[in-house]
Image (cartoon, rainbow, N blue to C red; front, side, top):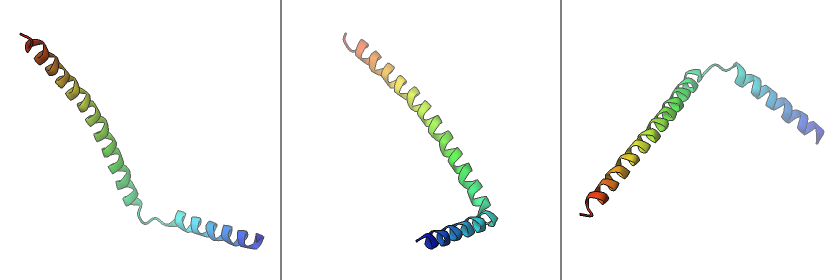
Length: 70
């Protein structure tokens, strides 16, 4: 049992060292981060746009209700 744990731990350490030394895919990670930042900026902008649009339609609704009671 203890030997299995040590072997698994050593295998995980070798894998972590190999992963740390591997430089392939660095650009892909950078592109992923850029994509995530762009999506985050779009979500913020669309949320603000939704608030403005909702307020606009609420104003239209109030004006129609007020002027429609004649």
